[in-house]
Image (spheres, rainbow, N blue to C red):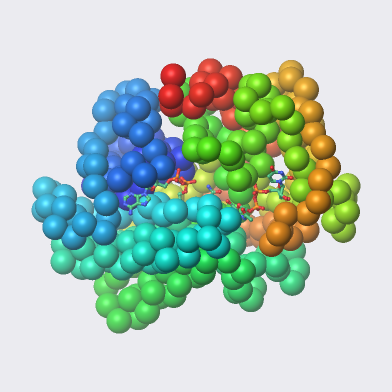
Length: 337
Ligand code: NAD
Ligand code: UD1
């Protein structure tokens, strides 16, 4: 199939591009490089063994999107393109509404004009907010506590309405838990600009000497060791799920909303320990106050994805830490080497 990956130069989209190319699909990457780089696109080509077709454009640019879709018939779109920093979304909500919601509407309109009727959308476990119980199933109550989360929920709802209105439109909402790790080559990985918001890239930067210590946000949560518990999932397992979700849309001709996680909760201190073992580096840390908006414990019930897609996460926390460290130690300044 010919598949367009919007936001495909980024962390998750890039790993998905590699997996899709390996499965024999023709991949075209669309990205405005607002949170990625031409260097990252080059590296993706090195990993795949062949340069990717790349379109440097914004999904909100209707004319440019029409030209891109007109090149050759497209079988499906995977939509990774979004801003994703929760704190920033609270300061600049309009930017998030414009890019994430406006961008998604513009993309859906461009797909309609081009007659493309399959979509795989990057949603997030953030749509569950502070879940009433764990493991979280897909029918849990949906609630959002920040503008970023709202954009994910709204776009899921828009896609749902579109599926009801357009009988032949098929979509998969993939609710990612906490993607971490990197391709085993060490050539591509997560490259957060500025100070990382998320735990794993922060640990990586401490390990590689870019930051003196990790602040652990809260040691008094009602969890196994008092630190926050999350469901970390290896980005290559996640990437594989995208290919499987697309196969499902084609094979079953039905829409899909699934959790993508391992089903296993891991605490901050457990991840720190696993990373120290994988890297052979000590990770100095200090327990500080809780972060606003954080919750104690979130992990997935991933059984629906297994039932419908035949997918399950295979790589464990050791592999996640090993591969994140391979990437960071070989690229201490991410793609800026
Ligand atoms: P990322 O920032 O690395 O990738 C997103 C890519 O989209 C970037 O390359 C960026 O340049 C591009 N982009 C943004 N707006 C664009 C626009 N208007 N037009 C064209 N390109 C645009 O982020 P990621 O971690 O790879 O996340 C991918 C998707 O998965 C996002 O939608 C994110 O919200 C979602 N998600 C991520 C996580 C996570 O922890 N990384 C968790 C849940 C969901
Ligand atoms: C974050 C996002 C969420 C998104 C999810 C997956 C926030 C507030 N929420 O959540 O919307 O869906 O990523 O991408 O950003 N931690 C530390 N020190 C740090 C960083 C994190 O102790 O420097 C702790 C956190 O308190 C949490 C755990 O590590 O307990 C994981 O944090 P993080 O990686 O930011 O992911 P989420 O909190 O799940």
